[in-house]
Image (cartoon, rainbow, N blue to C red; front, side, top):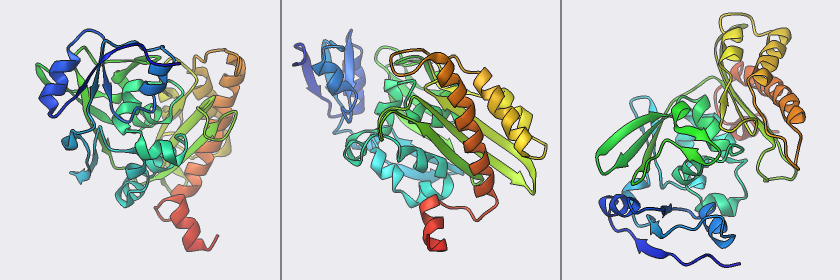
Length: 298
């Protein structure tokens, strides 16, 4: 199948792109890993496609004031393999390893994935878990939107007409972390995925962050589960309770891939695994799992 007819503009400046995106039914083209299939299936029928791939000012990755600043046009693979990301925000590096295949990650962009807002995708849930902030620019200027407020539903975000996601700001995290994902086939979109970070002081959990993908219309931040862990010993029973509270916070869909009850049950199972692994990593030197395995000779 071929895309329905549309006008095409290759933007040469950010201002030009934003002005063009003010056109009714205009869509931005970044990596194209989500939009192009939708065009070819005619599930998306924009009047205008605005190609932003020449906007080099949107492609950057740097550390500033204890936060990682990521340009929206930065490719998945560049973030995944960055030494700074693996050191400062290892949860993000591990999660990106679950995004499609390497060929997709070589082309797909961080901002494009977030703006696509697939509730089963890894990046939206990771950004919610990490308390990221998004910079959005439109004709009236820039504004900052917290990740937890950006995702409104399946493929729905806080972006308005003529607005473009330009920057992602993520605070550093040096505690334990883990990603646990269930999919029908390797590299498929997750049926359910759990993302967790913990900071430990001995056996006491100082802080915990838990987010789930694929178990609701948008990424779910399990705040009640986090609060149940914070300030107490992170025992097996405490982890099990947090996993049950996480599952209770979900609102999973039922479809031909998995019924809702199964997704909810797996949210608990995956959260329990993620928390246990995050606790284990927190007890060792910081670093990416691959780096630790190399040091340990495994």
